[in-house]
Length: 136
Image (cartoon, rainbow, N blue to C red; front, side, top):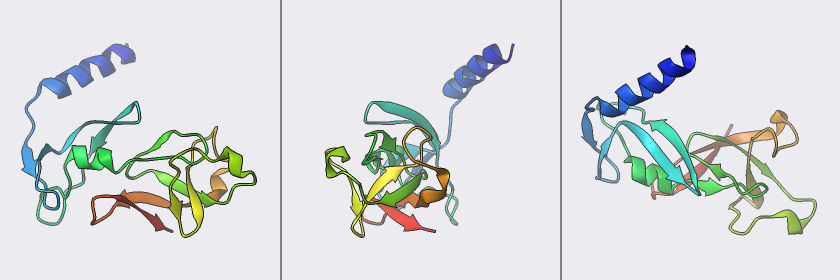
């Protein structure tokens, strides 16, 4: 019963008209929420409203800020927690890995990280249109 409700609700959300915004920083037209895709993965993203009641970035620019995990090659989307660590074996590093302060940026997925205790921060939008790491 719940499965059908979820499918019905997703269909209704796609059909209902949503307000459009002009993003403050990137100046693109966008909706506040929608599906974004990066590295063959899709997620549903809802942009927070800024102090003026608008959005800072469009969904396409947010998708472009996605980076790959240095260890498992899965995408790290804006708002996701990240780990910062050095590899024991340099051969384990994936091509295109992101380095922050000399440490490799990884995801906090259960099958990728050793434990949840090595979370170091979050991937957030940067003013230059690229993701930036904000440490706790």
